[in-house]
Image (cartoon, rainbow, N blue to C red; front, side, top):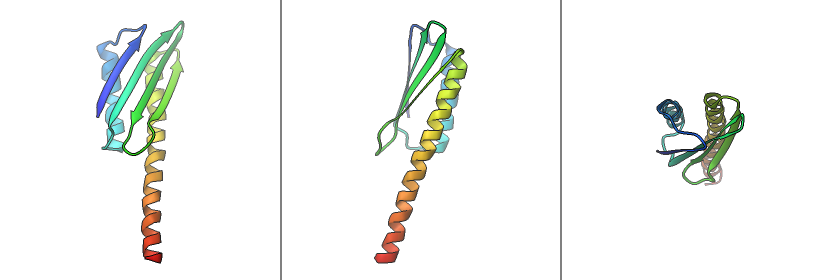
Length: 108
């Protein structure tokens, strides 16, 4: 999986990059076929914002954003949202395949 990390009005420190990479491992444990993850970190006055887009094969990209007062908390919240979306997507795909197999056995 390719990870692209960029910042608007903020410098990407090694600690932020390490935090993102640690969370990426969590995503790859759930689904091994992820294509690309694009994360944009930005600062607007007192709000720290993290936006992420996760491209998975055969589906619309998953997008999430989180705004908190601390950048590390917003990164954690962003990845929690992406994990929830990825689990939901994976469950839909598994249900679809199970339904197709069930119909094939029944009507095949």
